[in-house]
Image 1 (cartoon, rainbow, N blue to C red):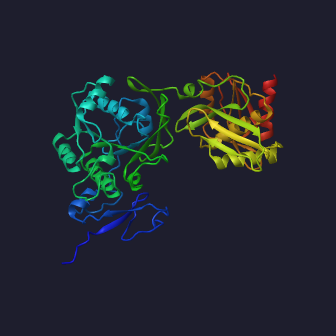
Image 2 (cartoon, rainbow, N blue to C red):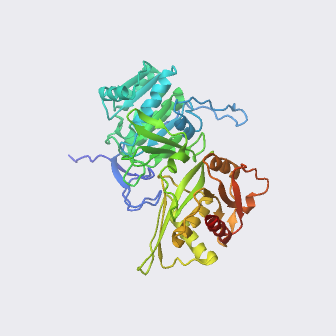
Image 3 (tube, helix red, strand yellow):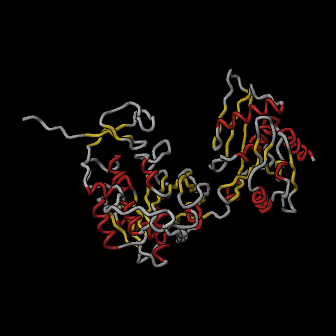
Length: 462
């Protein structure tokens, strides 16, 4: 009797592409060595339902017939989390929270669950990694007492769905999605097919039942979410926890948000009482700034609707290597190389035989054009050995011809600079028309890189 070989399918761990045979390069996303072999699950009605598909065919209405209504939001009781979510949690949404192990994902969501339960909402906390006793111990340490918060230590997706139907919570937290499995799939928990199928079932619960679901996701060594890339496409919002778990400060950033801006950040501090909010990030990012140090310049970046002051540092030193080193942390490497070339060509600074290192203190990423001028000022300060005036802030975009271009939301940035006690600000000349700057700020409007550096170092001499 012939041996029956079970049918298998190859899944791409980066994009979820399916193939009957193995490829070295994924035809879907072009990534190399990402196809993994998994047992093929039969395509049944249950599988279609788990994928989030409607069980009954409904007619497609005209877009004019659909009632338009603003999405109501519910505060989680944590202002910084609400800011990143776009103003609060949207009913029926699916939110994915990722981050390194031990960075505080479970702690933050447990605190949010306790706040929601305290407001009278029924919350179901599903843990696939900890027992109910362990969660109780952590809740006792955080001072959480909420009768409406229910805890379920379970990894079977069918049992989780049954508990959800029985309890009918308004909010549900699943920690973590990589530990949940569905009996309808023969693969192991955390595999491509399991993660996709379980996420599809949770998405169906969120959309049909109106239950807001928070998923906790692990990340790989490269900082990307573990599992298939399609996981990020299925959810409504993707939040990332950034920072070193050995330090007390954390930054929560939105990588995707269908209900709000993706540029907002939330700053937290880990303490023995859990995650506490940092309502003034500018003070935190500038708290350890050294006084009168060459190469240190303050930049004002817009993170969504919030202006944030950060310490941008540069170190320039002679090199004996034929090709000087260029390294940046928190700043785009290609943009840095472009700005160094502009300084050589337009400002006459010799950097071809210099190593250049750039760092944004505090672990924040500067990815907006207004950070160009602060970087140029920091590099020039380190190269000359002359410190920029301590009370000066730089804001501006730089073009290839050396011109300083206008930036957006300058007035909001200037208000934050004045609130933090700065008295001088170098800004683009193109922003002067109709500008209403705080009276305590001295504005230095510049058109070129040379004018900006002249304004910076002439103020220091004064």
